[in-house]
Image (cartoon, rainbow, N blue to C red):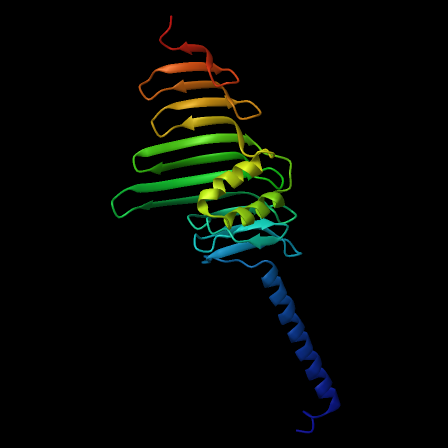
Length: 241
C-alpha cells in the first residue's frame, strides 16, 4: 500500500492517465472531423461555412426554409408544398433551388411537379426547368428570363407591405410596384404545353412575343413573327408548298 501511495507511483499513474485521456480526446476529434455513416434520417439538413453561413439546405416539406437574405431567414408560408433543396450565396442570400412533389388526391387526380431554378445575384430566377402534371394536363418547359438590377430587399419590403392590404387591392399594388422595376421578363420559353403542343417562344426586352415556333397538338406546324402591338406580320406553316 505504501508503494501505491508513493510520489513516484502517483507521478507515473498520473502521466499514464493523462496520456490515455489525450489519446481518447484526439481520436474523438478525428472521428468528429471525418465521420462515416451508413444511413442518416433527418427532417432538415443545413450545410454551413465555418462562420455559420448557410450555403445549402436539404429539407422535407413541413420544415422547408423561408427566404434567405444576408444570413437572415424570413417566413415564406407559400413554401410548404414541396420538399427539396435551397441554394445560398457566400453572403447567405438565396440563389436558386430544386423542389419536387407528387401525390394522388382522394378523387384519383394526379398532381406532380418538379422545379429547378438559378437566380440572378440577389434577385429572382433567370433560368428555370419545370415539369409536372395536373390531372390529365402534362407540361415541361425551360424558361430564360431577365430580372431588374434593384436590391431584392425592395421586393421583400413590398411583400410585407402589400401582404397586409386587402386581397382585392394587392394586384394593383404589385402592378404599381413593378411599373418602375423590371421583373420576370421571360425572354425564351421552350417546352410542351398542357394541350399537347410543343414550341419555342422568343420575346424582346420588354417581354413582348416576337417569334413563335410551334407544332400543335394536331400535328400542324407554324412559325410566326410579331410586331410591337402583338400582331402577326409574317407566318409560315408546314402545309404551304
